[in-house]
Length: 138
Length: 138
DNA sequence: GCTTGACCCTCCTATGGTGGGAGGGTCTAT
DNA sequence: ATAGACCCTCCCACCATAGGAGGGTCAAGC
Image (cartoon, rainbow over all chains, first blue to last red; front, side, top):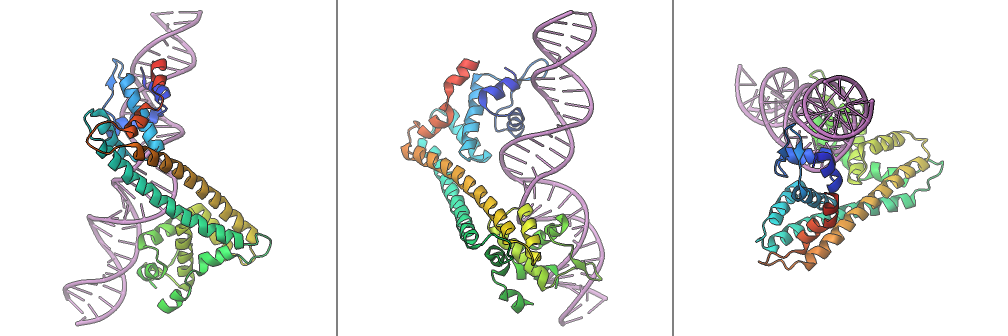
């Protein structure tokens, strides 16, 4: 199985397979006589695993850990869960931050007439957050 | 006012001020005899504006547009609102995506015992999403 | 056996926003 | 005059991904 077929079967792009190979996230693929990378079902499964983990937002460091636990039949599920929960906490933090942004923006946009007039609470907020500080520090 | 003072007054790091200068987000700062960048209250206000916009998640392209509207006293607030709403929609999309990730992960983590045993629904999900596809495509 | 086209290879570039550092110049206070 | 704080430019790294150039390999059809 060539890299193109592995890409189709796993849903990971050819580019990314080569990248994962280069950085050592997957073990170096064996090579054909013509120096083509060769893949079997096992390796395609690992690529799938990586793709699925990426869609859940795990970064490559976390995926490397998850992969090695996946390969280890005697892993304690505690370790997997710990990684997942750390990542989950991370996600929740980022979601909260983005929600704070969105809430502020929604409020400002709601207060903005959005017509021909120049008065705009959005720009006022951006420009005038704490204007007095400038005067006092100059 | 030197760049360090402008950084303190605006809350934007020295590094980032130079970067905004280099990429043209702000107009090139005037220079002293010794080639030091010089800032006045007006420019510090623009840096503040940028910082505030960054905390609301606007990217540099959007900020460039917002800045030019801010500088234009005759802008129609419609244009500002349009940019804000586009960005808001973007934020909401990303929030929804991350929430989907978090929800899935929360469910999987909840189902995982997290003890010494190797059985782990998290790894099962990552590895076994659609395993039959591999067999049928090999 | 030769050509064609699909596929593969490596190496380089860019993205976006930020930080870090090297190597060297400027300014200010003692 | 010297020390120390500050500034300058230029380069590198991050993370995950995509694009392209320049060239090799393979399979099918002639």
